[in-house]
Image (cartoon, rainbow, N blue to C red):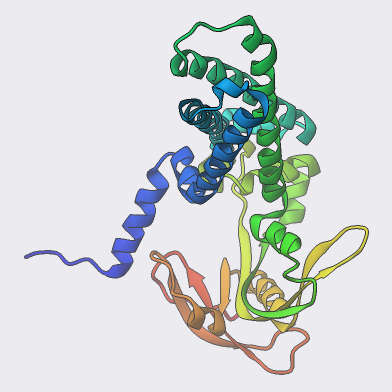
Length: 328
């Protein structure tokens, strides 16, 4: 008898296949559009460089094409270095870089970028031009080419560093002024808490607990148990609904979220700790999104949450396909 697969199974296999790809390929796939934009800018810079800095007799179509190829090669080299650093957060090198101050990490990346750009610029000069390298090119043009490429790489690297620190959507919202005036949006909100955090702090110490939480955002399974000797338990509450989003602050701007949806998600997280559940989701949340493969929804409960007059319909969500009541 032929086996048939459900859409959940197919989607689960697709997610596993995507996760099995190397990190560098996953990262590159998410930023193909950005690379295309960089290449367009590189071609424009190559043409401008040939027009502004080269002699009149070298401003011909073959030379312009060579300048464009040169600029695109430098762009690919800088992008490759960026991809290499972007794909190492889970590696030993990534662990070392995370422990360094941001300025030191930025200098290390800049030095690696400079070495790559100088190497590629010299190699392309050998490939694209039939005559040997002149002292003038090595003394004048190579530093200028590397300087332009390095400055562009620093600019792009700074954008990605800001994006990494505050998030791509938040950075874009600040630049575009999306939330300069408060807006009402439909959002999914989750509050996450470490179970028995006080006992965990006594066992490991505050510094080690901080390291553990930092590692949580990179590795959530066996590697934490091997390094810290404990497996932390997390409780979470998740809700969906309208949220008021807007900028606030002058000395330090930030995007703040307000509304009953935030309060309900926080109270569901508190209830998950009291009920001994890992995850409690509201009925509104479950109606707005499909339950992922491998999870099951427990029995329905009507909860009176602190600070609310009306009950909230909610469910416990489990890894195993068992229906367990979440009433404490």
